[in-house]
Image (cartoon, rainbow, N blue to C red; front, side, top):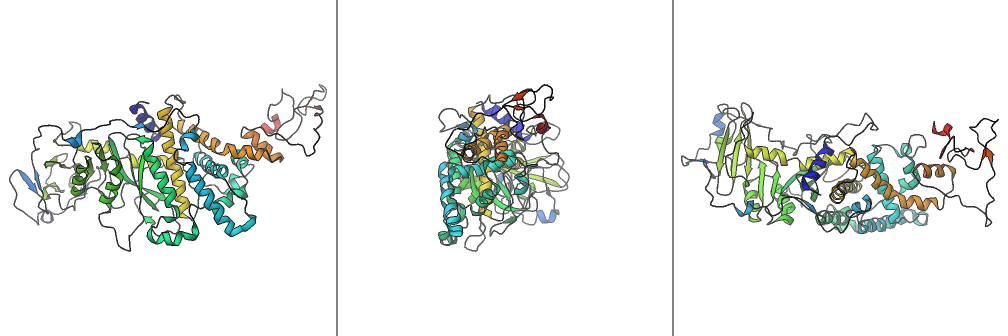
Length: 565
């Protein structure tokens, strides 16, 4: 599929086109959050000016054609002459593409299983059965891969219909619930699986947790993380930012970020394709290491996330939580470029770049080094936006109404990759209320896997429902049906309850009623249609699958007119 078309499709998803009249009017679209707890990632969030005396307390000797920062870094006023394009700016792959996938997908489940793979499902089955047996003994009915995938399918169906926050009583209600959910498994079985769901050996967890706080879900998370990188090669522009997974239970590394919509949660750093929002790799934040605050965490996160893409010439856009001159130089060694906002208290920023009342609105100051460029733009009086780039090397200013430098416009175009991914995850999230953070982590993995599978699916099937405005919703519904289907068919073979037969029929399955004796049941007798006038005396063998009353083809097909109303 053409990369530009895929980019336009993902932008359409964010534009709110995947909602229709069936949506509940109370559901509001999630707005992408700010990128950092201490600062805004948008370059239009300006730095307020301080007094001129504060900005000029450290005056150093400098050349007349340069600026000098507090740590002695020299920034020249004019660009350095370059004989040829630097090797770090040579892009070897402009567009993203699907990799390591042979042939086309037959259904969305095949794309989803690339990420939530049989290895992950088998681990969940193994440890869930082991833990449940220690609690319930022989009373526990062994689960298997079909039932675990059906559990995930229920999550997805509840999420796409905006019922993920409904209670189980409401979700299984015959009046207000979903027949697809009731057909998949009983409410009691669903609650048991949610209670005993485990991702590791709890008996050995305490030893591993001394070295790794993510021990309860580490193996599953690492398997999932590795598979994200395997099936997609990103384009030239990447974005690094953080995601806050909402959670208010007990956890040693739970974060409080007041600028985020969810406020409390688990922080995960992501690197994504800036155009298609495909998630490439995650770096979980697990708090202090050995009881000490991690120094230089931003640089450590970016270097770890960017390692698979070294020597590719790609650019990484980030906010001021990560950006530093030292990080930019380290990325250059790996032939990667950086564009990001800069905090005003960084020691490599000259005093001339800081906000001042005397600076003219919409003016820009540029500073150049051999391998880096910095700009300070004034959008308002006494405000300033500072950007650092190793991708740009000229003082280009776009002549528009705001006279913004080209560096800032590029930053605005590529900064929102992770925020857009988070917005997509929130729109049809599978997350349910739980006090166990490993389950929250896994539910977030299901959300991310569904987004990645959708992008891969469009890459392989570009014409699939191309006239529909709700393509992602249809994809998730088909995915949920495919995940729950095998368990429904297994239940149909062993359950003859009248209500379940109705649920099977409403979910699109035909249940065959098994005879209780070894002899074949006699042929059904004809009975008078309950909807026809008695005078017509029309007798039929067919009946309504819901109320089981005799119904002729004229007055009903699967259900009679009375039940349909």
